[in-house]
Length: 195
Image (cartoon, rainbow, N blue to C red):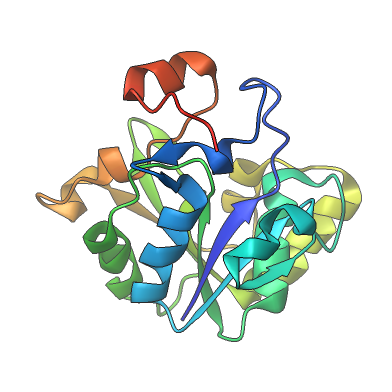
């Protein structure tokens, strides 16, 4: 299976590139890449500015459709994936947890197009599995200008498997899905250094 890190955000609210926040002398994206390589056979990054991530030593792709948000990032991930399914995560998730990702990876996929955690009354589409069957519908929505990934997950013809917190047992799903959007989020984590 393919694992993809999306690093396409502009980080407007943070004021700097969140992928390069450091955790114990390692950037979040380096930490995520190392974790993904221990789980998936095929790993790459989707980014707006591919030159920023050249030192990772992995494949990097720019968005097939520019300025298309997270939906465009997932589309690009699936477009380039070597496998029929791809697990996608954002680059600003400092606590991605391997056992939790593997749990999502191992859920029965037959009959579904997307497998997405539904925690605290909301989908977490940046910590989820998608099938290449999603490509046509995603492309149509992007061309229509509807970039809301939650609209995609609820759209006609897309079968989304909603994973509730109880299905993860004692695994730290709430921690694994955490991301950082603002300086306040960063201060709460104590990860205040920048790469």
